[in-house]
Length: 114
Length: 112
Image 1 (spheres, rainbow over the protein chains, first blue to last red):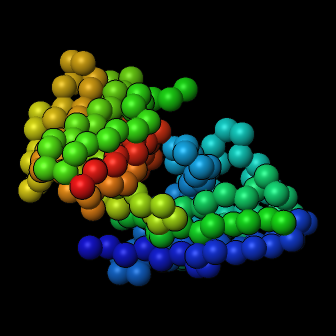
Image 2: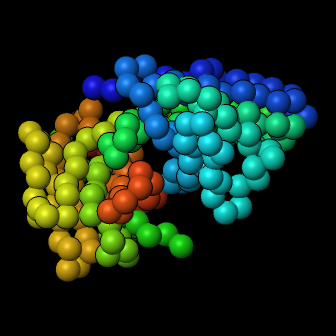
């Protein structure tokens, strides 16, 4: 089956710094990638949809200047959490989708902001 | 507005018995439904899906039922095994686009 990787799997950073999370589709080209956030005991919350070569579409309430998304190639999307604060601590999951295909999820990244 | 709902946050079942997880949706434009399984600190993994032209899809121990008139789907796991203990998310997708809408998840515990 299709494989999506995320890096890093865990990251701890200090308040005010920026963190970049990478999402890669390893064996298929992903025209669309999605970024989700999951709080403890809550559902997956879609943050943004990223299409290769164009600007990401952010969901209502998600600050695009804080969560920078770049989808520079058909196999890589990055999410940068800028000026991170403790409330940004969460589990971030990406998914990648072949054209009109199913979503394949990455293993997630646990971000802790101290 | 939550378009996909899982009203039971948790479920406990004895090993060997049937587990039934339920999911309701509100958008009649959804035409493809999926179930994902998620372990703590991992990404969701695909389990089984069903399109709106069917009312049942079976894959081994897993069966998904779709009742379009009631806008309801369910996942049956039989026989349940301890390794099935996880959080199960249902998801729905519309006719166009790739956006999936997820339910809030049901935590299944299978007791040995």
